[in-house]
Image (cartoon, rainbow, N blue to C red):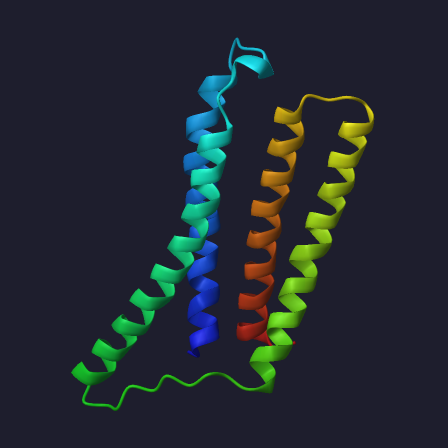
Length: 148
């Protein structure tokens, strides 16, 4: 497994975990409250930072785990940087994730045109960013296992 593939796994776990935690925090806050009453900026900012930190730490932990496992098996750990196939998979996965996020951005523009509260616009953009990241990661992992 290349370093890029480990990073994809780390990003998939990060997007799902942060999305679940964010939803767990925010859904109870929305029940019975108007958007003006909901404190959402700090939880969203923390969630965005958590995604970045979790991806970085996940990739590092995966590399360390790979090194330890290879050493335990008596092999030399390999930390290859990938090849042309990895770059192609990255492009394909990013294109799928970004296209989904683009459609979500269109939805945010439509909400803004209709004077929706910034809370709902931000929630939509955050959600499509998470879903786009998940879709992109899944597309990359499928490409790794099945080929382009």
